[in-house]
Figure (spheres, rainbow, N blue to C red):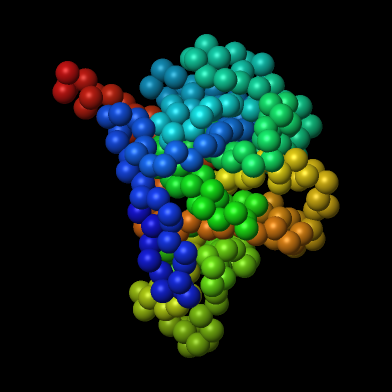
Length: 296
C-alpha cells in the first residue's frame, strides 16, 4: 500500500518498507504483531443477515476473513451476536467470538473480544468491517504498522485524497483534516477544509485545491487500536459532537486521544451496503474465479 506524499507540513515517514507478495500471502517487513477483529452484526436495515449472504459460495464475512488472513495478522477473529454467523465462521476454519447483543457499536464489540482474550495493553487490534470482502490486505497491515510506528497515538486509521467536488460535498463521505504530524484534527461529514474563496465565487473544485498544503482527504473506515484504549473505551462518555456528526471516532478526539492517519494513494474497493453492491461484488468474484480457473 503506497502512501501519499502530501506537502502537508511533513508527514512522518514509515519506518519499514512494506512488500506484499500475494503468491506467498505474507509481508516481508520487520514483523508488526497485531490482531484483526471483524465485527459482524446479524441485524441490518438494508440487508438482513448481511454477514451470511453468499459471495461465490461462501458467506460474506468469511470472504472478509480470507482477506484479513493475508494481512500478516497473528489471528483473525469474527465478533458476532448471532450463533449462525459464529457457526459459519468456524465451519470455514476461522475464529469466532459470541459477544453481547446489546453493543452500540463495532468498537464495543471488539473491546469485548480484547477483554475475553485478556490481550495486553500494547496489543494492536485492527477493526475490519464485516461488509468489505474486497478490502486490500496491505491496507490492513499498513494501518497496524502506522499505529506501531506512532506510540503517541491510541488509534490509527487511513484516508486518501478526494478529487471530485461531489464527493467533497457528499455527507455520506467522511472527510478528515490532519495536523502537522499527520494526526487527525477533526472528522466531518461537511466539506473540510472549506475553500472559502473558491466557493464564495461559485467556482468548481479544481485539482489545484488538492495540491495545496491542506488537500481534501476522504476518511477510510478502518481502525487500529491499542488494547489499552479498548479497555477504557466504554468508560468514555459520548461527546455531543460525536452525536451531531454521527461519527464515533470523534469521541476519542474529544477525550484527548490521538488518531494517527495513514495517507494512501489508493481508494479501497467499496463495501456492501445495498443489494446492488452485493450483485456487483458477486460479479467481481465470479469473474475472478473464472479467470483463475482458466489459468490452471
